[in-house]
View (cartoon, rainbow, N blue to C red):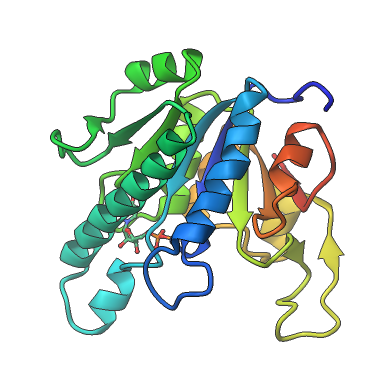
Length: 239
Ligand code: UDP
């Protein structure tokens, strides 16, 4: 395998990526496959930070739509992310990959608090750092947390792992048969054409800080490794 083209990456995994064929929660086999892929990247010496979502368990917005105070729902969503973080940590550790979970909400019995310099040190020591509980603030998303941690950690790229979607299209390929795949686009053009790469706060953070984004399909288990080798997999959004 060729030398990695990145030395430090931040990978965003939505909660749904852990769900596999289930309607809710985490599918152990799917989590295991993701951990296998992450291990191969880790074994190549790449420093990995991971930000997880929790769409497989809980979403604050959905709870608010049913009458719950949005902030309360969002805090519950962030706690759900911690569950996912511990699930992935366990899968990685059983494969011999050293990890640390750092949570933006203090839960000291199960995770370290988020401390930027400590997280950097873990990465330097080749520990996979799983950033849990999003940004720690309601009204934000885990995409924003991913952009934020990527910028803070000086990651070279933000890898947005999708489930069954292989990148960005001119329209939703599930609804529009004329939708065309885009292999590379500038962030400015994506904005002008109203192509949804991630939410606007997250996107603005990437743009302001010159952080490139690659959107790819995690369901193809060769993809992450190919990206690390420099292959043009999925869609590259340049900032
Ligand atoms: N969340 C939040 N602040 C953050 C990140 C997440 O309040 O900084 C909450 C929010 O309720 C969100 C839930 O956590 O709905 C799960 O995150 P998200 O929906 O982004 O997960 P994904 O879609 O990536 O699975």
